[in-house]
Image (tube, rainbow, N blue to C red; front, side, top):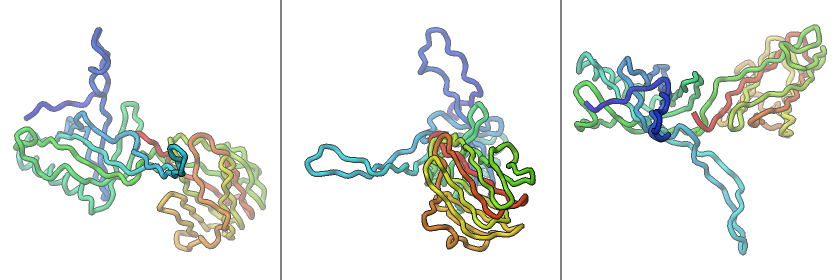
Length: 313
């Protein structure tokens, strides 16, 4: 069996006189969760899994440029920039110390979990500082079966798994902010928004820590007669003209390819969104927002949840 490289939890100090490139790689912890919720930890040396050096695709995606060329003018003008989906390549080894039957059960379980026809799974990368990021992924290659002397044995296997990622972005943990009316005419907890019996009106700054735009999911709990959500930083407005009563909940999902506006999970509210409205995003960095909810009471709630999108794991 070839020599496996065990993961390191800490990068050792560089010996005197040894150049930087010869330092041992500090590999992150990587796992795959299939659509049924079964998680395989590829960085689990004690239980017979190890991520080998040589992982690719954990950082920036490729980009496609839409460009215009003009007669008699050198070069071209860039009209649009679009991040492309990408492949992530993970060299892994796994084994079973007790028996061939245990190894085959592990291999077959992994094959079943990776079946891309079951739907999209999730790759999770956890760095040594404890931060984690996720990306949607489907297996495309790597476990076709290679019984070469340097690739497999009776109770072990070394292979390179390839995952296709339709979205190029790594997702951070969800961030939720809630605004609520109170009889004391103040939003709680500590957001500088003023509240009256007929209107929720104020301004707040939300800092998007990601590397790219993030698309929020808005949840509004009634009562209200009209809702106006403005990103002052970009100048975009989202207006919903619909009366909702106590106990009603409106969810407006602005995420790409998932855009919906539903009342109580069933009624489509697209017709109640004004024509000039946009399902705006949060730009990287600070975003100044203004929220206006007419017809509000102390029961009114407005919450926003988004996931920062990163260019690297």
